[in-house]
Image (cartoon, rainbow, N blue to C red; front, top):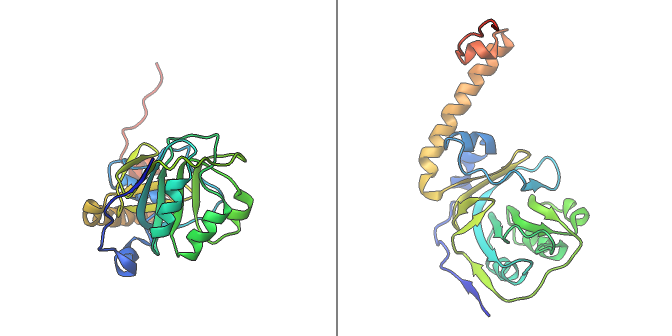
Length: 220
C-alpha cells in the first residue's frame, strides 16, 4: 500500500501572476469558459465571505483515507490550494482541525474537499478558506493508498496540479493553467460588459432590453 508523489510544477505564478486574478470571481471565470469548470454545486464554503485564489495541489484518496492528504501537506507551498478527490464519500472526514492548522502555517490559500471534513467550528475561526461536500463527526482511516500531484476529478471537474483555483460564496471554479491568458482576457471583457449593464440598469433601462431579448407575445 503506497501513496505516490507525482512530479510537481517547478514554476509557480507567485504574487505577480496571481495579481491580475484578484478581481475575478468564480462566476466570471466560469462564464469566460462557456459555463465550464465550476465544481459541483454541492461543494460549498463552510462560512460566508471567503475569497480564495491560488494554484491547485491535487490529492486522490480512497473513501475516508487521510494519509494522502497528510503527505500532500508536507510538500505544500504558499498559495497552494489543496484539491482533494475523496470520491465524494460523506461518512468519514479526511480533513480536520490539526491538518487545517498546518495548512495555515504553510501559507496555503485554501482547502477543497470532494468528500467530508469535521472540526468545522474550529476551522471557521482559522484564516483559510475551506470548501467541502459534506460534514461529519466520524474520523478518517489510514489506508496508505493514494496520489499527490496527479490529475484528479474534483466535483466533476478535471484538475491538474498548478491549475488556478478561484473560490467564493458562489462556489469554486478551475482555470486550466494552459488557458490562463485567454481566460483572463475573456474575464476582463465580461467585467467591462457587466459594468456597462450596471450603468444602464441604474439609469433606468430594463435588463431585458439591455440584453436585446425578443419581446413577449400575448398569450393565445
